[in-house]
Each structure stands twice: as structure tokens, then as C-alpha cells.
Image 1 (spheres, helix red, strand yellow):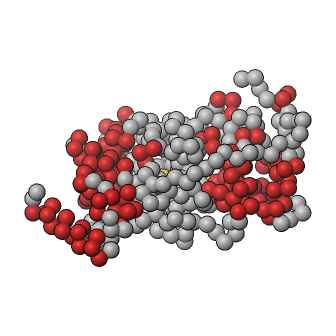
Image 2: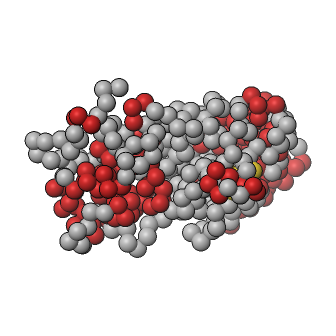
Image 3: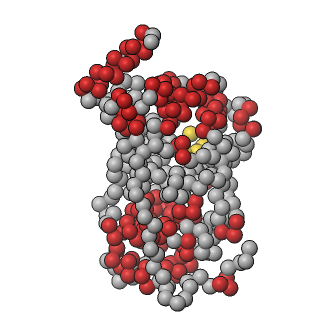
Length: 351
């Protein structure tokens, strides 16, 4: 063992002894265990959970929020780009919904500022859930007596079924989708044995080559608190990298398509890195199949660095420590309309 490594290990041992955070981890924080708002009642969360899993909020009755953000796995769908109604696909990869509360904007281009605003979009996107308007969504819900009763209990109003209340309930449920107590969280709390020596090398490399310029804080996306302003980063930064053309990383104009402001060209939200090992494929277009290649892409296009195989292995070992504890989620029983579907069969294509 060389002298610098001995010194590093000594510092870690001192931190463990006195319960402080380990050295060389100053850019990170443990993931919060809760992000609930005071208004997030048990009734509202339970209703939001049902709406999240209900495919009847889509035009064909086949696509739910969970269809693209699978809570039984990584909170995404494992596809390059998600498949919506009638087999249609969009242009971008589905981000994970796990820990999505710990970011100041939603969608790759940040066009939604909150979870509530984000939940509205896919319902009426023609390549996602395909409803012609939010009135159609609410019309479906109002046809199901059980939902009408649950909205009344959750919101205490005589006419509680509304799109605003629906997305508020979904967001309340999504705020429970947190994966704390990862090995890295335990390491940050002073448990020296929580991660391997290889993972420590990966963490040191992650910090030293500049990854933490964008990937710091508890969710490793530069988010530090609920009052943060939305932040965007140019991607790809080094447009001459051969990997830009190889993975078609330069054609999506990013936030420019939302703002029409020239300075927003190829600006994207920094994604959460928690549970990153579970959310392949990678990048906004989902064209990078493996995490090892994603590390090389980010090093080349953002830092103008070429990584060795050993460095990639060390980085992946570090990222594997970011997988936290997933809460147990039982599939909910959805309310039904007795003896009659809420989806008109004549309105659904056979394709």
C-alpha cells in the first residue's frame, strides 16, 4: 500500500471513530428519508398510487404511469424510448421516477417545474397516454363511483374530481418513492466497511476528474434543497468527440425546443444518479446500452477525458453503491364500474 493510500485510510478511520463524514466525499450528502409535504395525507397518497397504476387514464386503456416508470424495477422501462398507446414511441428515454422529487425540474428539457405539472403532460401526449384533453381523463374517472368517493375522502370537497386534484394525488404518491440507506449513504455516515476499496477509488476518481461539477448533492444531480432553481447543462459539451456522432447525441436541441432561446441549445437537466445501475439504457435518447459505455461517453463528451478499463470498472463499483433500499409496494386494487367498461370499445383501434 502506498503512502497516499495509507493516509487516506487513516483519515477514514478517524472519521469513523468520531462519526463524521469520510474524507474525499465532501461533494455528496446522504439521501433524505422523506420528502412529504404537510398536505400529503394517507388518503391522498393511496389515491395517487391507484391513479399511477391505472391504465384507464390512457386513450386505449393500455398505458399507465407505471408502464413507462416501472416501480417493480428501476423506475423506468428499460427501453431506448418509451412505447405509448398503439405502439407509438417518443424521442426520449424515460427517466426514473425513483427519487424524482429531489430535482428542481422534470423531463429532460425541464419543461415542468414540479411533479404535479409533470404528471399532467403524459396523459395528453399523443405518443404516450394519448388522451385528447384532461377533460377526457376526468370524464373517465368520474364514471367510476369508487374513485369519486376516494377523491371526496382525500380532498374533502363535494366535487373533488379534477385534474388538479388528480395530479396532486399522483405527486403525493411519487414523493414516497425514495430509496435511502444505500451502501454509499452508510459510508457517508461513517461506516468505513459499507463500500469496497474499489468503490472508494471510483468515488475519488469521480470527484477528481470533475464529475461532481454536475453530479453532487444527495441525489448526485446538483440538487441541494426544495428551494433550488432549475439548472441545466450543455450536452454534449465537446461536440467534436467521435462518440457524439456515434450515438447521435447532438441532434436533440434540448431545452431550446421549450424556450426558443438560442442559449438553451443542447441544454438538458442533470439526471439523478441514484440507482443508476438499474436504469439502462442511458442518455436522453437511450442509445447507450451499458453503464460502462455511458461512463466513457460522459468522460469524452463532457470532460474531454479518455478512461482506461480500470477507471471504468472503479467508477461502476462506486455507482453500484448508490442503489438504496426500495420500499415494499403492493399493487393496488383499482375501483371499477360494475358491469360496464369506462372505455368505449368502438373508440379503440384494433392496431
